[in-house]
Length: 304
Length: 218
Image (tube, rainbow over all chains, first blue to last red; front, side):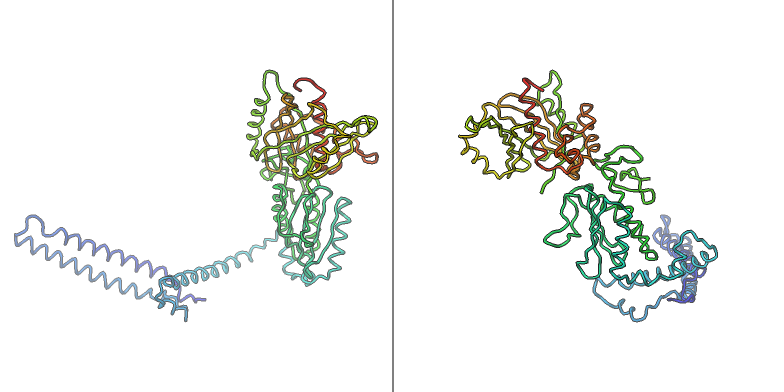
């Protein structure tokens, strides 16, 4: 990272820019009077000599302006960022590599600024203790290694206890087709089926299909294909959103329990009308969203 | 395996309107609801009655549904009550029936069919059928199927709301009688069961029989 001496000095840079502007201005005036020429009343000696004198004066101004600008620019030349060996990129003459070094410098500056600002932000934030969520607390306690390495029978126990608490209409089967990852096949009565792929106790992937669709294809669980029906494709989308919402590596057991409880609320997918508009259908779909806390059904567009 | 959960609804033809006019009106309403035309459909039914050599006369209804083109549905009326025995067979059954002409003969002028446009609207399937017996127009049957769910108990309200959207007030608040009838002694009704293709065919047969009994347009 660049130290502060190589940072652009704002005062010096402004002075340099100012002198550049006045220099350009002077040069502009010089050329302007040159193009104007002596004028229509040329031929008179007095006019010609006056014109030359004027021109001389302007040239002197330009000259002093150049000097001034050179001085000013000397004061700010420490801006140059040196990126070590990457500087050789600049000498690459292939056309598509031309801009590489420039963008490298730009992104370097960005990162530099980012580090600086985040440093300020940390100082400010640490002065105001905002303890709004339990997560900060959990982070300090460090993530327990238990969520990283869970033996399969513990997962089975957790799933079984959750399944029992959800009632008779839910059936959860566990598979481990690819080694340690657990795959849950959840059947919600005659309404729908879902496949939930776990990584240890964390939910990684959810697919929802209709009760009449097959989850097993060629003897394997088809966990990538989507449902034939729009309603279950929408539910899959929402279940993936909920999976992210409930994600909590600090409390994996609570996370999977909350997720499965939320998932179980889809038993009423076709029966309960939307809590907001009171209708069953909106855009030809039933209420496909379940509130994450209250589990109330809502249409996609009626979400609170 | 395909499952069906549908409601077959009779749409009373308003006085002074012809069948095609009503179909056109319903088509417009369905398209306004977001339905997309996807071909046409036909369900037909032919009835055979047993010859005297088989004892008491019994009827066999032979139905075809364009939704399941490789199957023939044969429904044999049971000797007692109004129950039927259903058989789902391959296409060749039609030819077999011809061979059985010594035992079952086709009733004359009773071939009845419902045909018309087929629409898809989200997960719904809508079929607007004009029922004709021979050359005579008999009425209009609207079939609405919700493909995502085959449990009438779960999605009847949903289907009703959908049907009310384009059929208006003629949609009853209770499911079609066929779905409510006790199917087995132990089960309360088909309402809590998964419906299959054969249940759709049975609903068509019921409606067709009612059409045959009435003269004129229903």
